[in-house]
View 1 (tube, each protein chain N blue to C red):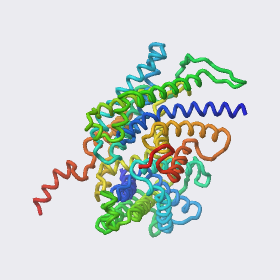
View 2 (view 1 turned 90 degrees about the horizontal axis):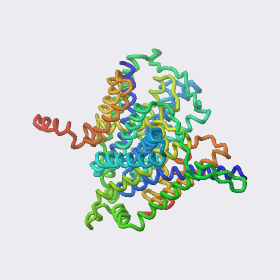
View 3 (view 1 turned 180 degrees about the vertical axis):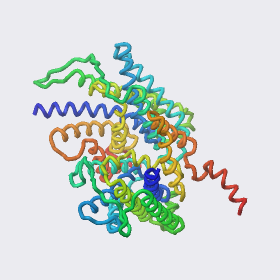
View 4 (view 1 turned 30 degrees about the vertical axis):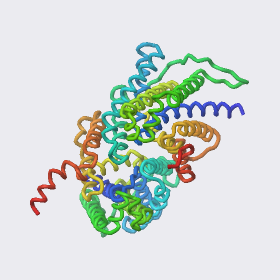
Length: 288
Length: 289
């Protein structure tokens, strides 16, 4: 029983991190209808930037801020120079562009930082907890707290502020939003800033959680998060979060307890095809 | 040189198959390597376990590829565009995982010892194998040409451009999408079979998702829906890495950057509608007429 609860806690942490990456993807898809595969590259750069700033200054807080700023800039560059000009083409054109960006950035990371795994020896300043014989490490606590606060801030921005209103309007109908006086290109850029900054946080958290940073760390998340936004309902942020948490828990429990002959990474896609058959608009998507 | 040429010819066959799915019917597929792999594994299994020759197993390979294409095509037809892209990525990952983890398919070790193709008792290798691949490539291009001219292709184009309008005209989108899927996967199966017999050793990694991306890049680069676009795209993307070979470390980076520039400024492909090549050469052709 105790083992199961600990597995569950690890699963929730995994799911939270998936959710942080998937969030950006869901936001971007919601607003631009583009599958932003290169988001995982932004996340890799975030992890590297955090690592280097941490080594340079020794301050983890600075590392988070620096990585977020860098990733936000990267997000804008990708949006301005690649996606925006390609928006009028069929969706697979920006998709291929995005995959090319992912591969190119992975290569840059490999050339700059070397192909090997670098450790991320940071200690997050969060308390440990013992509840009835169950031990929650400070890293786990940090993952929970940071993810929860990110979700809360994002929820606050999108539902309570006028910026959030503009974002929701733009994601519903970009030309209609422009007609009502919203600077929709600006909103798209802001969406990229938010999504990319969150990806930076996710990158650093993964780096610390597994204590490793390497150039291809984005490859598997890149496609797994695609499956997750489908399961959640394309463009639905709450759906993406729920799907991520479920997958995190499901993966950890299934791999820990049931000996299925497939690798854990195939699980997301099997779940996705199942969902598509059963409810093709996703678990929380609206049928359009 | 011959090796590169042979591999390019084999890949061009697979890309032609992809062209039928993506270019003709407008069904985006990012899992084409899986179908290529299904063809290769079927051929390899028939050759090593049943002892069938390439020629005897080829019809079976085509039939099995087409059948699996039909089975996997059915769920794909339910979904559109973005969903379809992700579904096909999913299919690719699952098929690769099955090849890698099920012992029947050789597991992580793959399948080795696949015999070379014999033609009237002569074992084909080097140039003769290259010529065989070219023959198959031309057969496939001929099939594509015939498809393009046929009524089925007209229906497919109609579905690609405006699905609802097409269905009001009595064209069944499901039927033609499936038809395109089946033909495309069958062609991929031929490519896979040739690949297995040429390499003599295959493993799951040869049919992973990046290969699918490569196929689609070749197609987009050459120009979707065109007859020669797939061949041109495969030729360019097949030769480029060889040209960049001296730049060992920067090879993949240059390759991806070129692809990026290409997709950014010429999304229709080199031979596609509204491309620079078309703009330059079309007036010339018109003058000739």
